[in-house]
Image 1: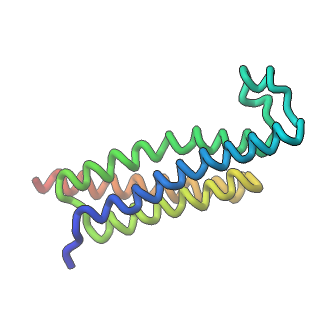
Image 2: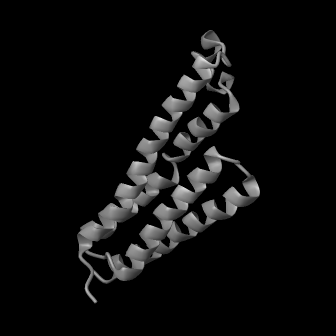
Length: 141
């Protein structure tokens, strides 16, 4: 079965949507904290950790969206450019993007590390497998 190379951009789109959603969630949580009078605005201007826990969790998650996802974007674009998108790489890409959504849900919710860490590691394994697939594709060029 031949896979259209451009399908690799759909899981990338999901990852981008997740990141944008987190910015909206951050704004909502900050507005709620300000409205409730829970923060000292002069402190939060200089220190992100001066916000309440609900805001800090989302802010930390946004930072996280610019770590391994950067590798994901690079891998997806490179797979596309070298015409190496396969069913396997597409499944791995979707798995990675979905794992990031689950990770974000846990991160901004309970933030329970014993649940969050395994999901993070699943995403990392998928990235490593995508890299191996890319290397195999590059070796065949």
